[in-house]
Image 1 (cartoon, rainbow, N blue to C red):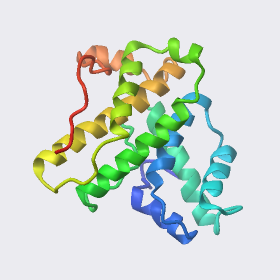
Image 2 (image 1 turned 60 degrees about the vertical axis):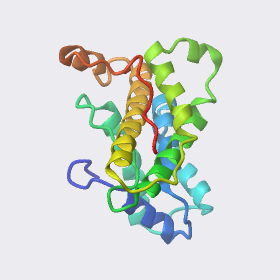
Image 3 (image 1 turned 45 degrees about the vertical axis):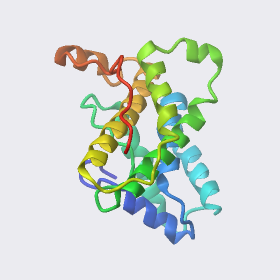
Image 4 (image 1 turned 120 degrees about the horizontal axis):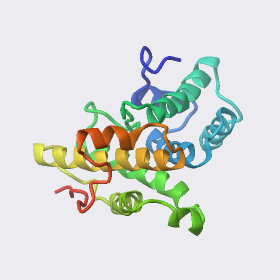
Length: 205
């Protein structure tokens, strides 16, 4: 499945979940997926097994459903490892209310941190300060208020919070896969460091 010609979105994956009798949001599993790809190079078999376990099924109902679930992993891996820094978390888009989008970000963050928090102390100590700070910021995101109004200020805040999540995932992947992508090189040329050191996430009102 081509990441360029057949981009998977949140609703496509959610529909596969619904077809298997699950009302859960894909956001939580996407957070786990991003962390697992960064930390463990999660295999296709391991990912399919994890999703099926979450859906409480032995295997996907159809070949097409399996292609979506495996394409989800491939799309995420391609984006995390790309030099273009075009990774985006799989979250509810503009078709959803701000409250639903905030809920998706919260669930994504919880899934991501669930995996990251399992690392041993030595691994954590070897991470850079920007990555540690990004993960601390995510700890705040996991407790954000999702009962928010649909207004421009909250939309801007949510965009900023999502950017923190996006950057944390890319930082984790980069540090665990030195040189893939060339994040440091690209950012040094632009003069815009990845860590946003000294900045804390915005809050929703």
